[in-house]
Length: 56
Image 1 (cartoon, rainbow, N blue to C red):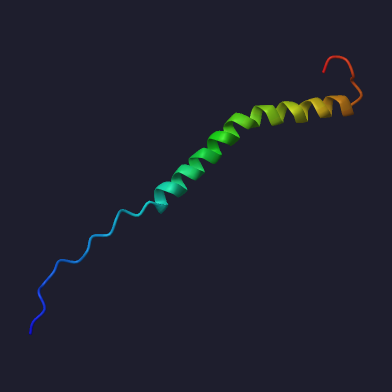
Image 2 (cartoon, one colour):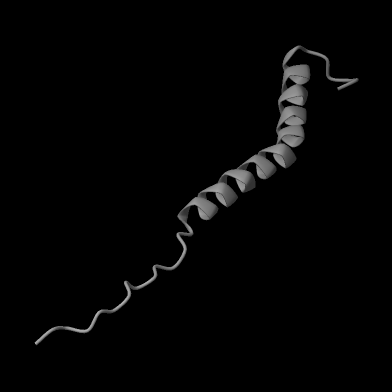
């Protein structure tokens, strides 16, 4: 007895590349937003460490 011929099952689209791309883009956006804050904090610490208390 021959088995009926069936079409192969379709796989759902692979979402892993989109998740990785979204994660990398999110990290870049967070870094873009946080960099000025971190840069200012480091600049302020360096200004204080150099001995200039006023004008920082």
